[in-house]
Structure formats: structure tokens, C-alpha cells
Length: 231
Image 1 (cartoon, one colour):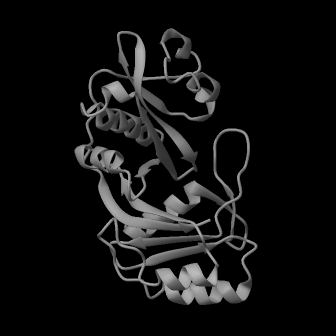
Image 2: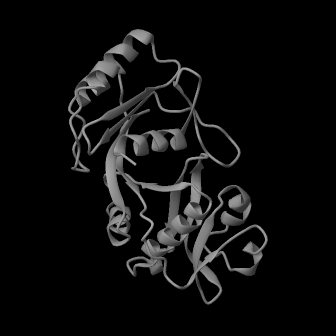
């Protein structure tokens, strides 16, 4: 599968779309629907770029942004802003943006032995100190995989953006257990569960989240592009 298709799966997992492929809402599995950002740009390692605008962005601006997006080069540097960063911000009068690397988790990623599947049926069997919120959302973030230490959940990877084609990972680790390689193993365990359902496991993070990028390296994730979002 090429990088452009992966970026398509990524944006569809992040946001709902209308029939005109305009962005509508943040695609969250739990209750509540936040509005989508006004602009999404997905630059890939292949030199293609995917551009999506929210439904209320004026058509004239949409056309200008689409032309700029088509001129974006291939991207390999997580920290590199888009070629037309200033034009995007000016056209949308943007004040806030976010960006970060996007990965697909390969089939050969190896989970560690102590990971377990957490479901609504067995969630009460584990101590959730620091993960109390998990009990409330467990039914809608499946699959959910955790590392358990002496009955306590200490690292969790779950599906936080869900479509029939791809799931995006949501990863949390108790601070005292970070830096031990646990998170990479939990991500791999989650990915295996996602793939077992015939769906692609995707992982993305922000450009300044070095800990999350370290997890991606340790887990051997495959980099395919960088997203850029103006709210």
C-alpha cells in the first residue's frame, strides 16, 4: 500500500467527511462531537500531498489552498514545516497549527509477553490506578491492549479513531514505567489485535513529542508522511 493511500486512511480516521469530502467533525469513538479543523494537509514520503478543508471554508480559498498543496514536495523531516506554510496561515488567518509524523505498524512488530486484551467483561479484574477513565470508555475503544504489573494496568494502547479501514492508536503509560520499552510492546500487541480484525493499525504523534517518537522507533514503525493542521 502506498503512502498516499495510508494518508487517506489517516485523515478519514481523524475526521468525518460529507459527500463533498469536506471535513465535518473529529471522529471520536466516545460521546460528543468536536468540530473538525479548518484545514488538513498530509504530506507523504512519495511527494504527494492530500488536502482537506472544513465544510465552511469559502470555495475561493479552497481552490487556492488546493493549488498550493499540489506544489508540496516529499517530506522526510518531522520538524519541517510545509513549503507554503505562510500562505496557508495567511489565507485562513490562522493563529494555531499542529503537525507531526504518521506511521503504519508493520505485521512483524512484536508484542511483549505480559500484554493482555482489556474488555468490558474483564476490565474490573485489574487495578486502574491512573487509568480510572478507562472503565468508562472501554467498550468504545476496542481493541484495547495493556501491560499489567502485579494486577495493575501500567501501559495502555487502544483505538481512539476508528473506521472500517484503519484504527489510530491512543497510547498512555504511567510515568514510573516509561523508558523501559513497555510502550513499544503494547503498541505492537494492539496492532496485532487490530490486524486480526482485518484493519490497518496507524500511529501518529506531534512534532515535539519526543517520547512518542521514541516509541515509534523502538517498535519499528514505518514512516509514511507528516500531517499539518490549522484549527
